[in-house]
Amino acid sequence: MIHVPPAFPRRLLNPLFGSAFHWSPQRATLATTLLSLLALAIPAAPARANRFGPPWQAVIMADQATVYAEPDPSSPPVGPLPRGAIVVVLGEQTTGDDSWTQLPVGYVPSSSIAELRGPWVAEVSVDSVSVYAKPDVTSGVRRTAKRGDLLRVFGVSPDLSGNGTIWWATSEGYVGLSTLRQATSPEARGWTMPSPADAPGGWWGSINSPATVRVAPSTSAPIVGQLGPGAHVKVLAEEQGDEVDGSSTWYRIDGGRFAGGRVHSSLVDRLPPPRPNTTSIPDSPAQRWIVVDRSAFTLTLVQDGQPIFTTYVALGKAGRQTPTGVYATAGKIVADDMTSRTVPDAEHPYDLPNVPYTQYYRSGGYAIHGTYWHDAFGTQQSQGCINLTWADAAYLFGQTEPQVGLSDDVTWAAPGQATPVLILD
Image 1 (cartoon, rainbow, N blue to C red):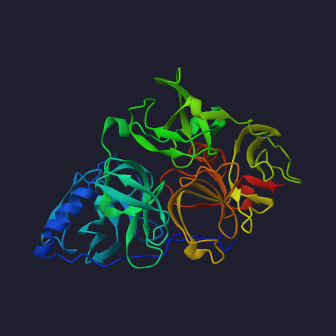
Image 2: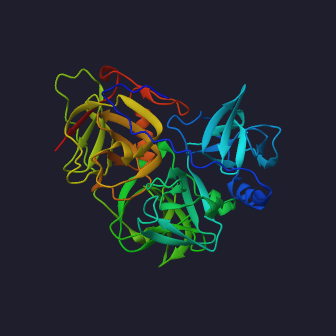
Image 3: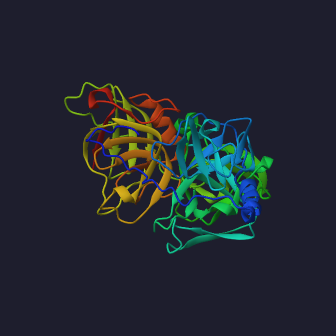
């Protein structure tokens, strides 16, 4: 567990262990089925055990991990999991000198797994599944996904009602654990996250009509979602693909839900570029600082009075406004879990695992961070935080102090050792 200075109370994910999966011969078939659903091979990612407690997603790091019915190597084996398999962690315990991790189907040695903080691409493995707005069946259905549809998964969330159910948290909403499997097709593997290096060269556009987002610049490429008119996206690159309405130009986009996807160029109108705001911070010796202009919905990174990066952001809604003032990026976390359970005045309940590239600047949970659940940049959308696209957040994270390694937990610094943040109207 991390120590957090009193000035920066964290948004911790309350521990939810769920009910244990006790072995019985009658459950052998279920166990085998769940193992096949959870064994989703992806490249291994370095990480440590989740600092917030279960549930969380992890990846098998051993060449092969045996799942046992109980936290005991002499108990009946449920089955093997290969290196790279994604699993859901329900709890951890120590038996004698051995540490065990509880999965939905049994137990594996804790030394064989590592936390998975990054997103992965899944496909729907059942005929159809409801994608809920929140991890709660009463929250409303955003869409119905069909077998083979692609969804980007960011982690797992406990049910907001506290009933013990656990959900996959995707960029479009929440789905049941048994409804997804890893998408292994070459086309699906092409839906990769943008690089931080892409951020400075991109330009902003607005979707002008209902837009289908695909994994490649082709009308036959798998669909990853839909963007409605007025959604703002950042165009990172032009690509040549299938001709539509006389043009073969497609755009690779950055954004929230479908970062790294492609849309045809006819569906995007250029927005006026964000205007830099280089307002200085009085009596500050800093050579580099951040200016957030609430009236223009922009963020500018300033070096020696000159703008080196400017982009559009989403800010707090009425009643949850992004606060004005002078702050600093004193707390940085590569992937943070945010939940309304630790925010008494939250506008609505929520649970967001692995929020990317989070930089806390003010007490009360106010942060600059990446966003995977909306594309309403340039508007009032957040609970007070400053929301960026994936690539913009990753780029900015690497430009500010304190410096944080990708496998580190939270890093805290005194305000004088962090990058100043000026928020103004």
